[in-house]
Amino acid sequence: MSRLLRASAIMAAGTMVSRVTGFVRTAVLVAALSSAHMGDAYTIANAIPFILFDFLLGGVLSSVVVPMIVRRQKEDPDGGRAYEQRLMTLGTIALVLLTVGAVLLARPLIGLYTDDGWSERKIEVAVILAQFVLPQVAFVGIGALAGAILNTRDRFAAPMWAPVLNNIVMIGVLVLYYVTAGEAGADVDRVTDADLALLGLGTTAGIAAQCLVLMISLHRVGFRFRPRFGLREARLGEMGRAASWTFLYIAITQFGFLVTTNLASGAGDEAPGGGPTAYANAFQLFQLPYGVIAVSVITAMLPRMSRSVAEGELASVREEFASGVRLVSVLLVPAGLLLMVLGPAITVLIYSWGNNDLDNAVYIGNVLQVFGVALVPFSIFQLLLRVFYAFGDTRTPAFVGMGNTLVNVALSLAVAHFLPAQYVVMGLAFSFTVSYVAGTAVAWTLASRRAGGLNGRVVAGGLSRMYTAAIPGALIALGVLWLTQELTALSPLSAAIMLAAGGGAGMLVYLVVAHRARIPEVSSLVGMVAGRVRR
Image (cartoon, rainbow, N blue to C red; front, side):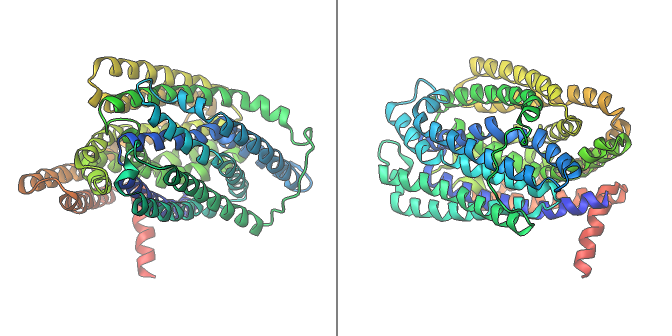
């Protein structure tokens, strides 16, 4: 537990700074573009590079590449150095080819993720932006390979801190865009090609800077890049067989994203401010606690569980997983409840500036409230996938993902059909939540069979105690929200008061109650913080 806590704390610090600067970036982005038509065009264009990266490499990194690098480090005479060099060489070539093809196919790619009701000018803006941002595919992929190699050497700080530079670059670009473009920068009919070039190239420059930081960090830990082209020695056949199910899983989840994005695009065209930008920004906020807390634990867990499986120590796998779930949930439980209470206050403070209006910001908060319910089950689901990956099993996650996506798509189509346009994105968030609650239950059952149990009683007991301790804090936050709304109208200032008083008091009460209830993970966190303060 202590090793996992220390490693997670290092990563969480970097991730926290990354996420905070990321939200500053997003706030400036929405202020410059609004969350209506121009914001939707940018959101769709900028999502495509990451979709393509996921198809080629994203999911394979955690499910296949990291465990294979760990095995090569243990079994190869050179500690896996040549194998890492081959992966970097072949990955770079594949990413560059994919990037060139994507830029040439920018218009049909945009067409996949947009609604038929979009105007020709709105589509044209999205295509121009896509052509400028699609080179991100290569930089994201190369950086991700570098981060994977760093993680297998238990070097977690750089991958968590590198995005900070990306955010700083983007903030500067967006401020410049807002100053030069003004109100026209939020209007697809008035924005100029020069403005779009600044926005698109600036977006790509931020990712390029992030990639450079990771490559420098990789060099500092002893990695020396040497082009190697031996396909047989790269074990691509073995990787392809192991990754085939992961590719299926990614394809399934991306199909779900395609449906969600198209439905949100249609809703946003009928109800400006209630489209894909609202969904994406709410989802980004929802992922803040997940990214700061859960991703750090997941990243530290996977190499350790992979080693335990390789050594036949299933008891260590069970203990590592149970410790990870409890450590993740100790802060995600109160965070999820507070998101459900304070969602609009958060988004009004962040998104009600510049070219965006208060109603659009409130709507993003309403979507965030729905996402808050999914925070704990979504995070546990991601932890469960790593259990399968540690065993080299990518088939089971593919089938679980298929079930998840089918549930999500079916519910999404239903809410888009029956709900008015202004409520569709909230319904899409609800569909996402239901699918992950169901998917977590199924994945837990299957992973438990694979690992000979997952210490379910211990985990369930810990979660129930955490929720019991979190309820008083959520009620206090709700009381502060009600009182503030009775005294004054909703504004960025009143939203800041709600968050400082309600959120701060709610989290403090939770920590006190949980510490007195002797929840060990809270006691460890309190002890670690107290130790830092005493120093």
